Image (cartoon, rainbow, N blue to C red):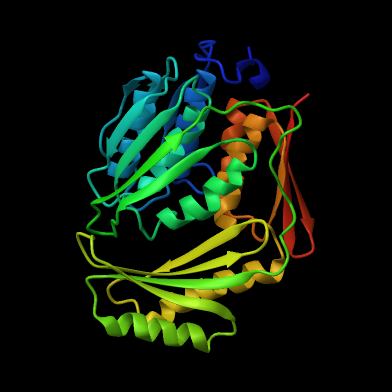
Length: 360
């Protein structure tokens, strides 16, 4: 039996109809997002999860430390019973109970992304009946995940527009591969308001571009070189800021562009790594910005797949984006396994309009 999400909203406990959802981790992009979305929605719907072939498309399949941290975090907030929650496991049984708010502390134990752990538990904590605080230790600036700046300046303001309220703080930087960073969030229960939805279909006019160059435990010439390369690009910058990080356990570097209009800020990032020249780092983030700006989309490709769960909770909403990523299309199919929701995709010139509708 599939119950309406509307009847669940903001209850202190969510009914478990004993249904089990079976998920194949080989589907679509075959990575960790399938696991994270499945865990989140198992918590929210009360449905048991059986997932096989976890991260089957990755070089080292199965649960890595970061993904195991997501499993343990989700289990803690809903009192779930788990089987297969161990490193390298490719099969997981997850049986949730009741979501609870409260104070939670999670330590990834590596430079795995703190943001991705946050994004696993955040939708479930929004529907808890009380406020929560979440502290996560791990990577805050990781090449394969949203950096803290994206979480704080792009993601949280976007979902706040639909009534999902949370504040975050960076306590300590943690670059890959050393990790050791720490973030904290204060999460308020979501209250559904009639007619309130997530509508991010138009941009807010001219976008001003601000650049940040982060370096930690690296020679000063790296930031100077990257600033010079940014100025040689076709982008017009309001300012270029160099942040020398002093609280990092290890070296790190990233070039971040903040594209701000009257409605929102989009954070795009490229990371420096050993053996990767500054020309490549700057080229990556400039191309991301140029593609996004040309399309006049309201939402970038990275935020696009992360908004889908919130649209599903709202049973409505829409946005425009400049790219249909494999993460986005895979996330759509995963969400539909748990909730009576559908998504429509319409191409409009250089952009795509994604809408959510409740199934009849």
